[in-house]
Length: 217
Image 1 (tube, rainbow, N blue to C red):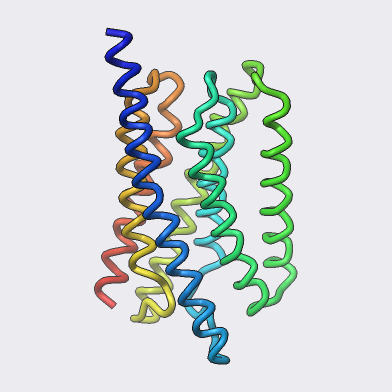
Image 2 (cartoon, rainbow, N blue to C red):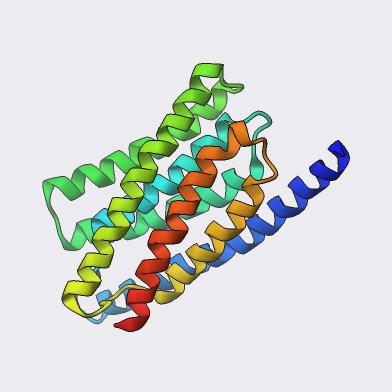
């Protein structure tokens, strides 16, 4: 039974990681749209919510830290999320450059700082129990932030009656990622995996709503 569980873990982990590449592609498409408008001298981050993208960054970051905190180290979550963090960070920087403010500057600085801290934390594995508790707490906090950030983006699309420069491909790929991550999380003991299930489950619900609005407008 343990062997079958291990095989399922690695099979679904590999599938989840492979499907996550669609998220990388979706982020690339979003960046491509931004850069195309930017080179044309147009507003390149119109309708893009800093709230939404910074909360997405934190969601990827929570998965990233969770992967480090797990024993054994979860390569399937770690490597896919670090790529996503770098791509979302690029979008955040572009939003800050176009809409320069103290708040956006702090978001960029905080995002870079968190990424560096996460990378440094790898040197101190395996984490003691308190670090696992910290990773779980981070997942819960980020779940709340992600939900409000996505709902804020939904509100912008609804009130403006346009999706603006939002990429539908990006949010389709994120939904694929979330569903595959949920399946993968079910192969991890529930006492460890429940924060991952909660975060990605709420992401499916709220981003599914956002995708409906994007397609409508």
